[in-house]
Image (cartoon, rainbow, N blue to C red):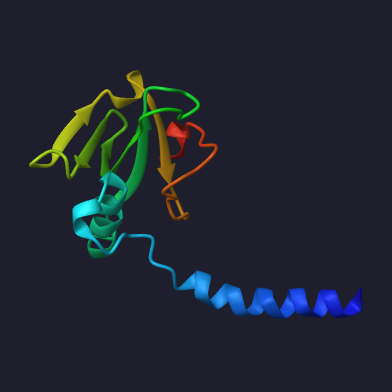
Length: 120
């Protein structure tokens, strides 16, 4: 039993450094989704935040991830790769659900997200 615990600790130590250096952005730009474009933009523009937007309060189905800057309580400046330009999203709290990634790295796949619109 003691040997099994030691083996587990050694494996964990070997795996952790590799996981810490993992780049979640796909190397093939032709396969990029909104997730890849948003994280790539964030690497070069750290003053922009990341938000996942959904029409479902449980973030099930098709969601969209974009970069944002908060202008005021009712307005976000959105950088969306799928749009050819940045745009202002006014009264955003009245439409949909939002998970703002604050001090956390967005995951490509997730089981649970919660609306945290009040976090910003």
